Length: 226
Ligand code: SAM
Image 1 (cartoon, helix red, strand yellow):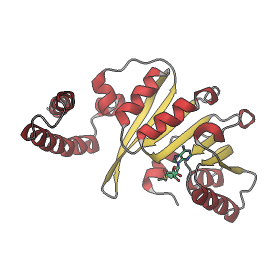
Image 2: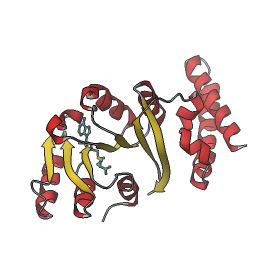
Image 3: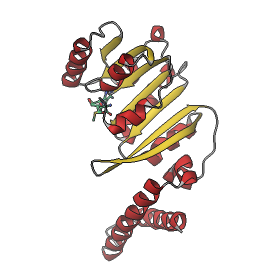
């Protein structure tokens, strides 16, 4: 069984998809989706030897050799044209790392019709990358598990123009303003106000641009919760 977080990611992978899961660790996601009959093909990519071996073990234990292909590779280097991958999932790593992976592997995204991303932080930067590279955000979900807030961002090829605030909160999340969203941003507002107060007390030690950025964030959050 998948964690609640990976279960919500799994729900964004359509029937018949040819999935590449990058940074797959144990390979839980492609293995579960293949066992459920959702996938036509699957690649599990891993850059590190220990998780790579663990994914191989998990695939073998489930009798999926040849159906889930485990590859030791950096980012989208795991994706070959012959795979005809239609969906790429990248989950459980920093949003900045995801931007690097997407940027470095751009030329391998040709036939891909959907990206399912679950960044740990730097969500704003990741949305910025998506917008700057011809993707629109078709779905977003916020969930809390083990005292962490997780965002799932689903993007598809297509132009979109988002405001700075939409990039910050997520265009779909800020539109929906779910209970989970309000709870998260009430907590974030307290944290940001605290940080801003500390910055102001340490006047001179913190660059003005950073203070301005936090002021703007506090302003946006206050507005969105009003
Ligand atoms: N995707 C799984 C999940 O969400 O539960 C595993 C997340 S695990 C915390 C992050 C994994 O990403 C690690 O196994 C790490 O080795 C892998 N990783 C980090 N950078 C990578 C890269 N450039 N290419 C492939 N895998 C990478």
